[in-house]
Structures are given as structure tokens and as C-alpha cells.
Length: 77
Image (tube, rainbow, N blue to C red):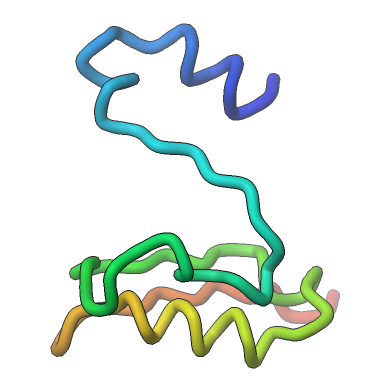
């Protein structure tokens, strides 16, 4: 199922708290105010991106001072 389909099946109080955005990876974080997140998750994404430095810079930009950036990158088998 797609993310949109899963979200559509959720209760209204869940759906109203979720905002889905689609954008180029080099514009990561461009839609949010700097420092607007206490926690940023990037799990299983970086190996599939051509410019991971730009993505990491965008994630760092939206992370609040003292916030947590969680990266999950799978090691080669």
C-alpha cells in the first residue's frame, strides 16, 4: 500500500496531524522553518540519494538546537 492509502485509512485525528510533501531531495527541509523539529528521522534513505550531503544539510537546518538526528543506513550484506 502507498503512504497515502495507509494514511487515508487512519482516524481523522491522525490524518489531520500528518502533512505529506513531495520534493527534490536537494530541497530537503526547504518547506520548514529552521530549527522547527526536535527529532528528525532519516531511515533507509541516504543510500538511494545522489546528493546525500545536500539532504543532510537540509535535515540539519530544520533540526532544533540540541535536537536528535537519527540516521539508519544498512551495511552491505
